[in-house]
Image 1 (cartoon, rainbow, N blue to C red):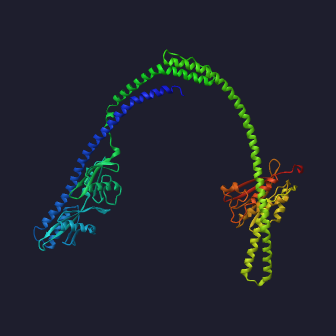
Image 2 (tube, rainbow, N blue to C red; image 1 turned 90 degrees about the vertical axis):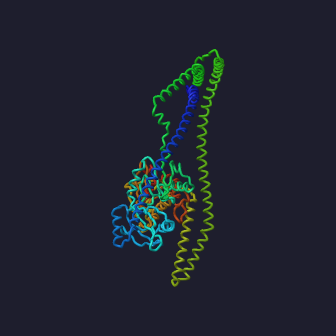
Image 3 (cartoon, one colour; image 1 turned 180 degrees about the vertical axis):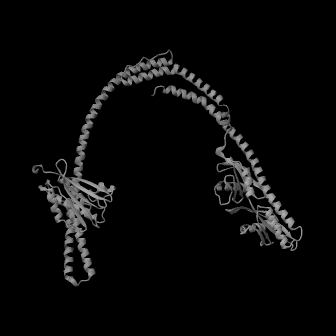
Length: 610
């Protein structure tokens, strides 16, 4: 237990007991402040929403009266075509916000068009114009035309044709630049304001202005607000982290939402704290001062004897003299005296246990050394036993392969030879080609059997002292080297006498050369060197210019039966490792992908010949 831990615990309990009511009061104030703020924000949003809706409705109403005035002038008296065209031109010149005027007959077919060319198409809203204007004699307010260069609003109104006794319609398309400027000057930068249709079509946002292209930034909010409007849930609404008021512009059938991000609401409690920081700091200081005085009093009465007992226990554990324990005239004093007597008894037991522990540690160290030595011996013996059992199994398998496969292969080879002699030179080329394939496969199978027998076969070594350079020259002279392989040799100028079994070492060296040749099917360079190494050693290195060995398989290439070839036993380099071990030769491999592989064989030189 750390010094002062109990005192800290008592202090923490007192502080917690004092702070819990304070936190409850603060939480209540925050909840009450949040409710007040929500009501204040609701009233502010409702007022702004109503004002904003009235401005949009006023804009639409002015445009409707403009169309009505135009129709009244048109119907005031008879006009021929020339006077009528002048009337339209004057109307367009005086009203710059009007882009085009279309007159429709009672079936909705266009009679004439006046305005900019090319005219703005309105085919998509024509059914709604016929239904609202011609059939029901209402004013049609269309959605915005999504034109990258124009923000257009379509208004349609019916008027009677007294000569034919039917209703006709006039469709006026307005540039909404004036409306956009009015809306931008009216919205608040701190609030989010959206105008959209009841089918979810965004018209205006306080962040982006009039929507001239499909804007899905507020799709989730708009979809939920449209659902509320369909259910008649106008007024305060909370959608997708926004709180605000949802309203409607009846004359246009548009919806208006004014709100603010919920995370941006500032609780009134924070304003109160900022307004009187000195008062809050003074209250906190008074509370903490009272807690410190109370903690000091408890420490003097209860914790001081307990602290003395703690020091006595620590001294006992360290083997030093135990300090004096105070014994006040109360329940803690009685406990302190009993604790002192118990410490004396424990001290005697500790001394005995310390001596026994020391004896056990010495005995454990001795046992660990003996167990480690015996474990190492057992592990070495076990590895040798596994290796001998594996070689014995391979030898038994090789004997079976030699008897059951090699002999039938010899019979097949003789039969193929007899067939080839009988057919003679007049045989068909395909038959001769297949016979040649059979010979090659028999030769391949015999080679695999010989590799298995060579790895499994163990014989008594015949050690001979020979010059490593001369020995290497003899091996190269008898090796069938392909023509596309260029052999470069660099031999040591001095003799390098080594004592090895020349027959089995020859097989290992030929296997290394064979692997190097196989990795260069398109030709390459084979560099063979013999040099005098350090510490009375002779080094034979064989390097190819092949693709190199990947890092992930380098540790396994000398393992028996490991191969990356489509056809192979994986015993070539295993034989190399075996004969190297039997002749006390070290093997080092250095490979770089894309540049080749180098295998070095380090021989111990025969000192008597030096």
